[in-house]
Amino acid sequence: MTSERDFKPNYSFLPKVLLLDEVKSTKSATDAMSFEFMDASNHELIDLLSFRRLYQIQRYFYRYSAAARKNVKIIVTDMNYAYPKLAKEVFPNAIVVIDSFHIINSVNRGFTKTRIRLMKELPTSSKDYRALKRYWKLLLKPSENLDYKNFKKWTYFPYLMTEIDVLDHLLALNPELKRTYELMNQISPSLKGLGDL
Image (cartoon, rainbow, N blue to C red; front, side, top):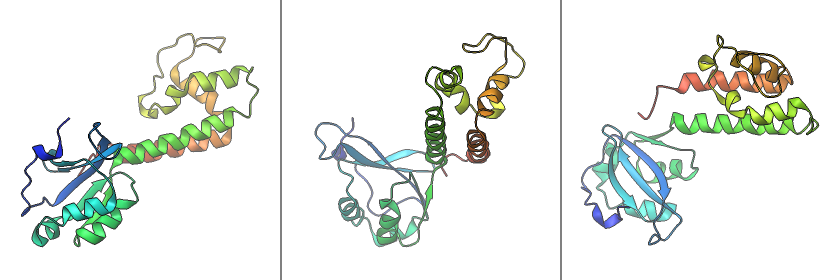
């Protein structure tokens, strides 16, 4: 892994759009996670820091000139609560945007929690319980990618079915599961293709 000292950033310049993220650290880092930031226009790594505490990141960015920090207009990141505070303190002209990847992951995790909770209301010996447990990947597959033409044998189902048939059966087990699935599929397609700014 590249270390912080391998980078020679230009403290007079920062791009208009910054990508901020955390990555797993090496053994030499002070924290389990390190902090990295990139230029969104070309996805080039600007610097990799061996720490991720907010006060340390703020202190680091104050090495950059005021003009460089004012040049940053958008910060694209995950849902880390600290980054809006970082933007307010260090980048006076920037707004924080959560990238679509992290939003989709959060929505999928929410759906999975709902599936597991509702699944646990069923007897563990029931075929519906076992089907909900077995076909979790199918439930997370984007609805527009489901196969509605090819019939095949599915475990826990007595006859040949398409992916759509299996999905419809599983969603019919609980209205909340169906509503959550529909919401997940409304949110995710609207975010796909946005990528990082």
